[in-house]
Figure 1: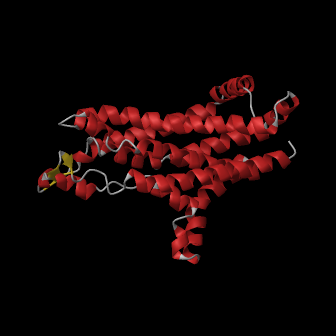
Figure 2: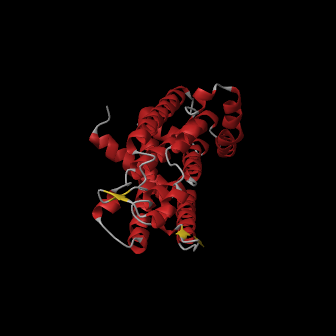
Figure 3: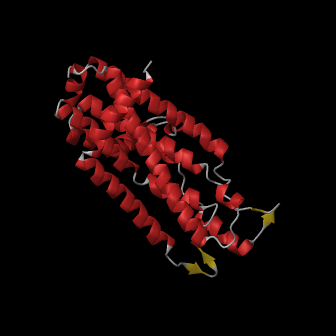
Amino acid sequence: MLKLKNIKRIARIESIKTWNYPVFKALIILYSLLFLLITLIASNIQINLQGVTISKVFQFPHIWNTLTWFASWFNLILGILAIMMVSNEFQFRTFRKQIIDGLSRNELLFGKAMVMLLLAVYAVLLVFATGIAIGIIKTNIFSWSYLSDGIYFLPILFVQSLAYTSLALLFVTIIRTPGPSIMLYLLYFFPIEPIIRAVIPEKAIGYLPAKLFSKLTPMPDFVGISLSDMVELKISGTDVFSPKIHTFQSLSVTAIVALCYSLLFILISRLIIKRKNF
């Protein structure tokens, strides 16, 4: 069990290494700019086909589903960032120096887990801030119920981001070097897992990591949400096209499985780190 004093020490060490690592700054800026650029362009596209527009997907409450779906496109960048940060420790033997200085291998892994948690938190905060700003601008009728309905997609995004970085951690602890680790990480999503899906029973496909992670942030029902501008049906003051198709209850089951995968990846990484000679 880590003591608070040790946790503070690990956090201080990781903050120094992280903020002084140029690749970290470059990839975080790239992640943020790509997400914001896609969001700004998409939210300003004007499509009107016989009265049907897509503008409503950027209004409350639909915007949370839309933006988390956009953000999921760039989770691979967070995984690559995790690989670069951990492989950097192996290449420059900072893990070895920290062990000599008194840190245990569990504490080394705990430090990297803290960074991965903060990356997931950053992804959520970026989506939240962007969603609030664009949602207020785009939503004609504003209410707190509209703002909060669908906000459960944010913790779901947190779980998804953590899952991507945990898988990246597993690959880099096995291979150590950045290039091959990134290559294997990307190849796993395509074509390795798609090939596996083609040869296993259909019922098992949805439980493979990449497939399951992608299910956490489903594509919004653009047609249904857009048509609600024309159909204007209300039930007890709630929009019938509210994003209830993918309810929190159904997504929470997938999120729990994804968390179990994340824990499994971290535990396997722990076993590898405990046995590796630094």
